[in-house]
Length: 238
Image (cartoon, rainbow, N blue to C red; front, side):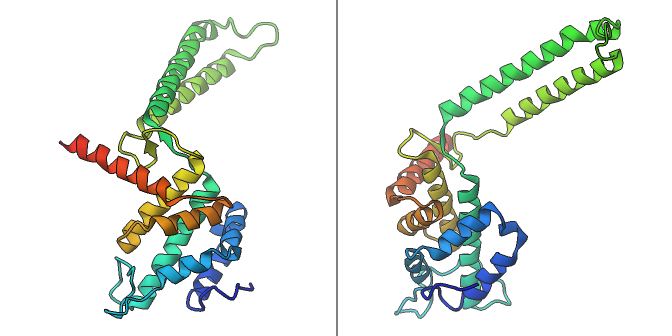
């Protein structure tokens, strides 16, 4: 592949590996291409590879480092891990929700599950008695199999309700501001950078979000959402 002149030479082999990885084909490749073509990414790479003149270390040094890796290797691996998250989040188009929306959907799915179970129960006795196998309709065995499918769907819906977002989830916001997809992707990027580099770097997160989604993003989106989320966690622990 041909790299833009502003992509640092040290990271190009890592990007090349991403390009030949099947996990980053299809829709993910489109997002990866978008990142590698957007001139704003020059500022992202410059910021994450910037040195502290006083210490000689990276200004935003990678927080995790394998014993066998140098500081340079650790920094490049952290950047690649960040880019992988950016590509996946932008491709999946995850979106923020309010907890009220989560609760409403949870109750809806519970109601749907109960409805499927009731249908299965209502039809079970006629199926056993063969009343559903009249005038060319399916045999009793096939009818019972359909009723089992309904029950499995009900089970699946109920399982969905147990893994839905909780109030302290990163992507649960107090209220909607702007595009929910842009906000969610930016929150995930900021959180990832905090874990990788020890800082949220909301401005850089906004740049990455804008490049990945071909839109505009503001540092305020992740800053306000993550601050609110921390306040909710603090209240819940007291």
